[in-house]
Length: 160
Image 1 (cartoon, rainbow, N blue to C red):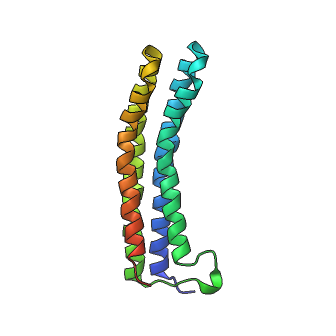
Image 2: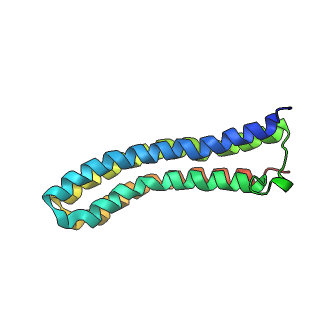
């Protein structure tokens, strides 16, 4: 059986797009969950605010999963009768197109988690400033969205 190296490269891109932001999101959600548990132990009425701050870094994992599905859809992974066997250059294009969401998603989830951790500190001292804490954490989300958008545009530009 001959190895289809182009398709293998595309599958590696899919794996990076899904796994790296997923790892970053899961790691950060776990750390923030521990910290949020401490906050709601002392002030149970802060659960909703703490949950929102904990959930923010989870979006990067979703962006990576969406890009992975988009690549799979474009090469017809779900319809094997029409599966697109890729050339090596096409495979590299898909691999490289997955990198923005993969790398930016991994790093932005970690840095957004740090901003959210600070926000959890804000809601313990000044719960009325939860909007400010969310805004500060959401600023990091901008770069996750830009990484997603870059991957999306790159994928759509790959000729098959």
